[in-house]
Amino acid sequence: MSDHLKIVRGAPTPEEVAVLTALLAATGSEALEAPQPVRGGWSDPARRLRTPPLPGPGAWRSSLR
Image 1 (cartoon, rainbow, N blue to C red):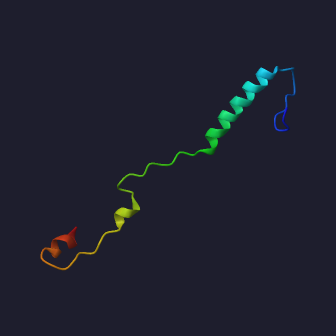
Image 2: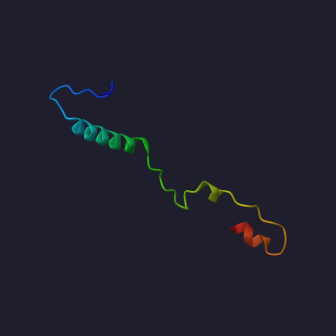
Image 3: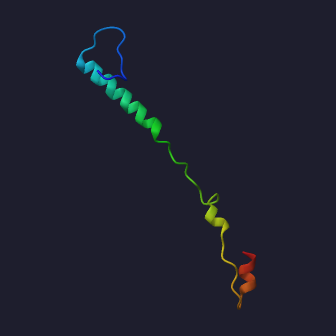
């Protein structure tokens, strides 16, 4: 047995210890991977960056948008 897992009562079989170890390993791995929040188009910081209007015909229309 490892130093990290200690059975305090009973006499488990090697199969029972293997099942317990597998369950603890599967449970612990989920806690390490935090799901990334999904960012929508409205909250995207790149949306705030826009190109300045270029001079030329119809430039006043693009300055409003």
